[in-house]
Length: 165
Image (cartoon, rainbow, N blue to C red; front, top):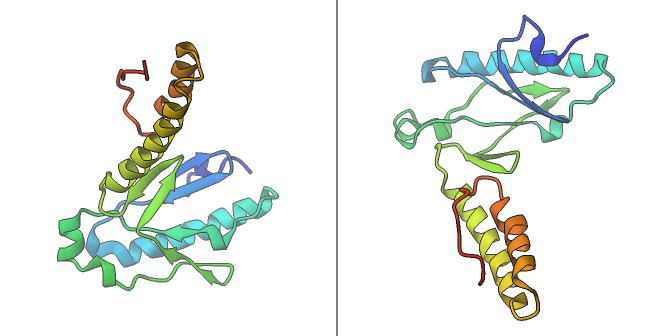
């Protein structure tokens, strides 16, 4: 059997990276129940593909999320919406409000605030450690450490910064 997302029968889009696979589908609010059913069928197909490929789909790690603007979320009362339950091997998927994809935190309201707060908090901790090393290390080592620990963070804009001179 070929690659999971290469199959012509797929009704969803896939994001795959090593052993991580995410599938998604776009729909209007009035079609959310139908969309849940389509995703459920697609997950069953993915489970069959995994079994045929000697892999295991972990139902406990399978989560579901609805992306929408805050205004649409409130207008259509999406938080209390009872969608068709997606079942994998007799386990129902849990609905989440945020999702981490390759180190980038995605929010159900399409806001970047949670991700930026996480990156900034981590950056300040790294800078505090580098500040303590300032008197004991040469400039070139501090610069390399700053590039490695701060500028390489996913989602951080690669802007020129003053390196602990």
